[in-house]
Amino acid sequence: MSPGGKCSLEYAYRQGTEKLGNAGVPEAQLDAWYLLEYVTGIGRASYYADPDREMSAEQKTKYDKCIEARSRRVPLQHITGEQEFMGLSFRVNGDVLIPRQDTEVLVETALDILNREEDAFQRETGRVCLLDLCTGSGCILLSILHYAKCRAEGTGSDLSARALAVAEQNAERLGIPADFIESDLFENISGRFSMILSNPPYIRSSEIAELQEEVRLYDPIEALDGREDGLYFYRRIITESPSYLNDGGYLIFEIGYDQAADVTGLMREQGFDEIHVKKDLAGLDRVVYGRYIR
Image (tube, rainbow, N blue to C red):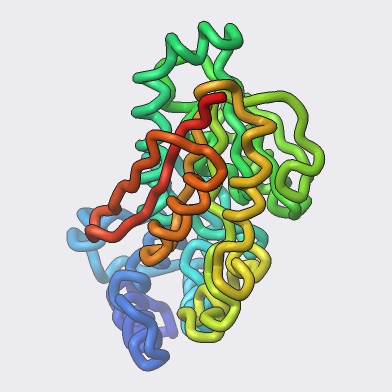
């Protein structure tokens, strides 16, 4: 601390790291840095060039509040209000799940299929339409629409009006046209789609209490709880989706690491074909997809 009560960047960073470490926050040093960068806008090169640069009183007050919130295990992304996903910046808050890198496997799978099947999709209906169930922040749908090489139309649905408000903000910020509908899965959905995607709630109810505090205390419980065996929403979507898929359309899920066999079996029982499982970077089963041919 400088004379007169002024605070240098280096002192604030060191103090923030210590407080987060004492609170048991994983990667305390990294989070303390991200929050310093968020509050001051300083980059690492500028910081190391002049670590004794003084923070303004307003910056120090804001930084202390951010550190205090993170000490209570408020997710870093809820403090900054943003999370990067597929190279895009998404607004997030306590009304939506924070986009995770694992979910990028679902987006990449969808993009691969779109690039491969674009002509077939176009021949079937003259357009490519996507439906994202349990859309949350909209990160899956909006990322696919942003990177798709073909011209595609997208609809996202969610039971939570508050989540849809976040998705709509993200669509507007990113300049990506999409429709969002408040719906209990297919309840308010009409028409047919080339592709239906979903990262539904899939945590078993009995396992919610074992989740990290950041997830258990601050993520919306309705976006996590997959009921007794974690498969409740997969069953509903798999059973109902054939009525909303074009002939040859695809159903694509994110799954828990131990759910591939169950979800694959449910899809096969419902008449899906060409069912595949894809792994994430950690080598865990992460995505199941299949095709519905009438």
